[in-house]
Image (cartoon, rainbow, N blue to C red):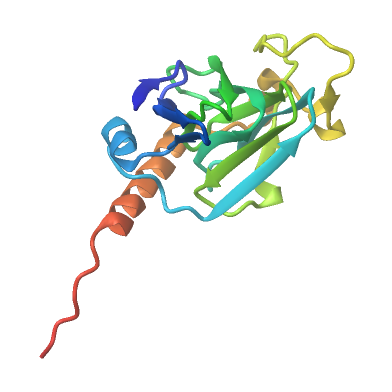
Length: 214
């Protein structure tokens, strides 16, 4: 598996080998050894898995979770193709305002890890299913968004009047306005959540100890 850190600090792309034959193909978008080597711990304990199906031209984002409580995600494309964009909205981060776009393809299912506090957007290039593993259960009151069309971010979203964007995402404020309102995650708070998740992951990965027989 090839691994590289994205331009947004703490986020990683994991590209597995794909094994093909006459029946189809097999790939592993998550491999614990590679993840632990990159991040220093196994994947967080998974509290929720999401299956998000989108019609071609659908745009979602830029979404992020208030931090605290914060939420980390591990994502791959399980059907179709999508332009997935990681956006650093953590105030105080060395890469604040930076972003990186990746084409996720179900035929070559790479995994993307986004640490707590990171924002993300997704553009469906065809009918697409995105699968997310989450470190916390979804809570609507903690979900926030900044505009995917924010000119200061200049994300590579197609200039197409037929894009499908929810009313909530169309009304999302710019990153600068979100920072002014104090709703963006703080970098130190995000790091604190990450440390807690890594500690929980290490505990969860320890082998179970046999009971002591008196």
